[in-house]
Image 1 (tube, rainbow, N blue to C red):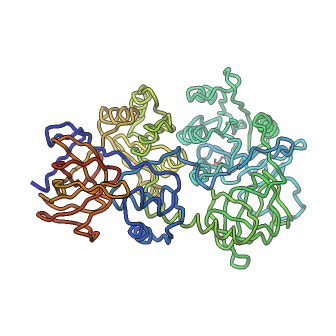
Image 2: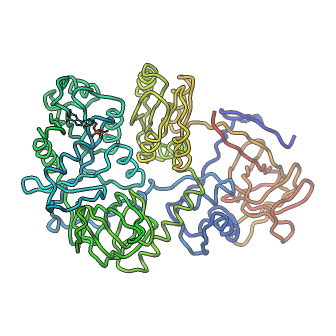
Amino acid sequence: MVENQTTTSKPTRRTGEARRVRTRALVLPQSLSVQHLAELTGQNPIDVIKQLMRNGIMASMNQVIDYKVATLVTNAFGIPTTLAEPAAKPAVTVAKSAPEDESKLSPRPPVVTILGHVDHGKTALLDAIRQTKVADQEVGGITQHIGAYQVEYKGHTVTFLDTPGHEAFTAIRARGSRATDIAVLVVAADDGIMPQTVEAIDHAKAAGVPIVVAINKMDLPGADPERVKRQLSERDLLVEDWGGDVISVELSARTGEGLDDLLENILVVAELAELKANPDNPATGVIIESKLDRKRGPSATLLVQDGTLRVGDYMVAGNVFGRVRAIADEQGKPLKSVSPGMPAEVMGFGSLPVAGDHVKVVPDDRTARSMADAQDKLRTAQKAQARALTLEEVINQIDAGDVKELKLVLKADVQGSVEAVQQSLEGLTAETAKVRILHAGSGAITESDVLLASASGAIVIGFTIGAETSAERLANRMGVEIRHYDIIYQLIDDMQQALNGMLEPVITETLVGRAEIREVYPSRRGITIAGCRVTEGRITRGGSVRVLRDGKILHDSVIASLRHFREEVNEITNGSDCGVVVQGYNDFEEGDILEVIRQDRGRS
Ligand code: GDP
């Protein structure tokens, strides 16, 4: 009974002993050399390099690769892995190598994004602010849309991002950057809180960005700001009148009433946030948008977050690099430099950078080129892997104590089920972790849900509801896991188990082959070789193997080396003899059994 299959979500019994089917994952560091990876996995380095090449990555023995890239290799060899340290922040986030010298910091303008439900007046508000307050507005100057603008108010500058809505906001976060300091939540006074208002609140909260509420359309007869405030309180957003600390401003984008009040309060929140930067640093920032002009080539709106960007600087944005050829403000006026908190249109990129990509000024062309190149390889690898965050990875992180929250985006068919499921999930606890629902709502899973999950390291749950095709595609591309459930107990049960760090996957196990150890040869380098006779199926190099003695599992690992006489081979079939090295195990005894197992994992 060689192709002996057991399908189970519980420990299996095959030899009378209860076994956990989850093999222990190989712990890998955040980065390691190709050679080191070969040693850890017990693979021939050449095979590791070949596997990388198959994934489009050319790497030498000493080249250092990232954990994600390493998993391309381990996945191909069927070796489960886990990351040793807490996941490092993506390379694209602003990395500060040394603590800043306080004396060099100076205040920078806050960056504001306008969020809210459709038709509640986000665009109208942005237009109204721009028309009345834009700094340096030249008579007859043609304002171009560059995705951001600045206004002056009482001697202070405020930067507004000109692409309203939480999708754009979260798309930038999903690329690992944070552009916004303050979210202005627009709610129409005559309409109150609507589904996208709730989404916007959840997206802003997930990002940890302070919210200022703008109760708009106060000029309309049906305006009812008190109702808006009450509805906000039901969403845990307590405005000052309600005893909370969230600032709310009543205004009208149409008449302009209340705009000053809004700007005033944005400055108050900015003050509290103590936004500072060091203009002397080499610039870092984020791409807000980019476009290809037939005459001028690629141009991008860049928000400088720290340092000063100057014409002539070498820059990298994700996998794109270039040298700043020209800088312009939103009136198209040329600038020589851009200071922190300021947006500007920048020419000189070799190709189009993507909105949300982190930008960094580097000393020279070579550094720019090689950083862009490294980022490009990483992205190709991530694309090939098409899997960034699964429940299993979250569980591993909970297991390792790296995360304390199981973050979820929950969608259900009707509001009634949303509330029921949400309540049950929020009641779940475990010693080390708890559930945090970033957003819950009714209706199909949308792209916005997937973006939020991707930006926040969350899993999307669809309870008796599917995903829009575009959302499914995006989830595949971004590697976000969408889990579907129809039965509430199953959902609750899975999440509870995940919190306990032990959701058992459904594993189909197949015995590939069995061998009996006839002789044990200690080698010179402290590695013991097991001299075996294959008694069933076949023994494969790199295969998952268990060492058994009297039916008990002594070790779970992989076959690091397989020899027939002196020759390294890929497999040995029934009836033949071989020499086997099992990774990390040397204590063989005659009569021990080796079982090579293939595990196919899936989830119910
Ligand atoms: P968005 O979808 O949130 O960007 O909403 P818009 O800015 O496009 O506004 C939607 C509609 O509401 C437009 O017809 C605006 O003219 C109107 N609107 C926006 N602000 C106000 C306001 O303060 N008062 C009134 N009466 N109408 C407004």
